[in-house]
Length: 598
Ligand SMILES: Cc1cc2nc3c(=O)[nH]c(=O)nc-3n(C[C@H](O)[C@H](O)[C@H](O)COP(=O)(O)OP(=O)(O)OC[C@H]3O[C@@H](n4cnc5c(N)ncnc54)[C@H](O)[C@@H]3O)c2cc1C
Image (cartoon, rainbow, N blue to C red; front, side):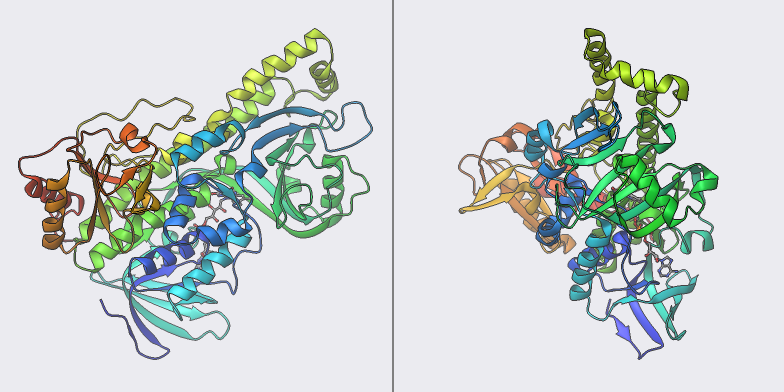
């Protein structure tokens, strides 16, 4: 559909993206790459000044890589080696007997002992970069790919869904001038602030779990900082009210880190508005550094929620990111889920807007992403509760009465065999937190059971209940397993075969030529690009380390059809008498050609 602009007061675009946070900006980049014309409007003049999300899991980093954003992010981000640990300390320093002690540390988020497993599972590793540094990268790339159509300082002021199109009023927040924007679809990436309430979308679940005050500050902690931590929890032996978490925010990573974020779990009356002096003295108390002179860069108070939209679609409006789901930050799933929503949506919008698929394909967005959103919320809630339960069980949590507290900590650090037993018991309990800190299967193993997939009746692989072990599978709906390939001297991942530009991909065994010929016919029939790759001995793609053979779950004659978002659409574990008929049927089902037009 051609874009049409008629001056300053009326614009027609295929897609309107409302919100220029992490989700909306990612959606803009993905839409551009898929050739989806769009306009993005963001109410604020700039991107987030507060760090907020900072852990970008392996799936998100793969997606950023697919869209040419990996290098720009990795250049500034903390590599996995520099955030391999989750730590529990009493404080950083202090002269009391229990100050400056390490209660426990474990590997997490793809680092330490997990690194090898993560490295085998994907072409890239997770990374840490605060949202306040990520969003400018996304904005720059969004603007470059869609010049003049990524507009900050513009807010959506009204919207009417006319059935066949949406008419929106966009206001310039500086001048008050309004523009009428007509679009075929809207991506609501507004954090749930505008479109959901206006269209009657209900956010269901737990609206107010606890208040957290987040303090963003600059300080030199190099003399005391134990580097290599993703997050450091502080459990104060003398004052349970000082429970806090501290995170490096860069721009330098490690001991010389300049900026930090500390979360305070304050009682509601204090959380409402602690003054700057109170915040500074609290930072000093938590860290055990009475002379520290932190520079406050920002303070926000926010509510931890567990909420899921009762629908991800209302007519022509599709909800993504925090507009669709909000969860505790425990497993770092917030922005990650939002980027993954946008990724799921972009190729479907491209297929529908180009006339290659009916509107019904967009219904698969909710069918696929809403169950993932629901599960992520439940998981984050249970992980958060479990983390508190561990601290309670080892007697060092906030619920241990003040009169027993010091005694419990002293017993924990006691050098006697009894103290060693306390610590060994605690270590086993801390290990059960791996469902929160080592949730590899949750991060990359999620699958779509229903939607734009052709199930083959094979049950999903057995899962570790704590979701810490990812098991690769080509079962339809799952993320395509990664394996390194060699093609004419070029090293590439199986993930590089599908995507914007190359469209779907058909991966076959070395004896899969009939499928490759069928793919060419089916691609022509549906006007959809399908790239093909025969992988294995004597084929044009070499399976460099045998990993593809180990994970492909099909014979040399079989084939796997992969969607542009690198989820498996369909597979046939063997050869077929009628490869083009079978493949055409499968693609037709995936694209929802059998669904009546809306
Ligand atoms: C302290 C903290 C730590 C976190 N840590 C992590 C983490 O480690 N990993 C993780 O994945 N997530 C984390 N999160 C969650 C993450 O920050 C959010 O999930 C993420 O910001 C959601 O992105 P979004 O783009 O969907 O929404 P938002 O960031 O809320 O962006 C929505 C945008 O829409 C704009 N907007 C709203 N209404 C309109 C309108 N009418 N017109 C135009 N624009 C509009 C807003 O101005 C805003 O910029 C954390 C959150 C917090 C608070």
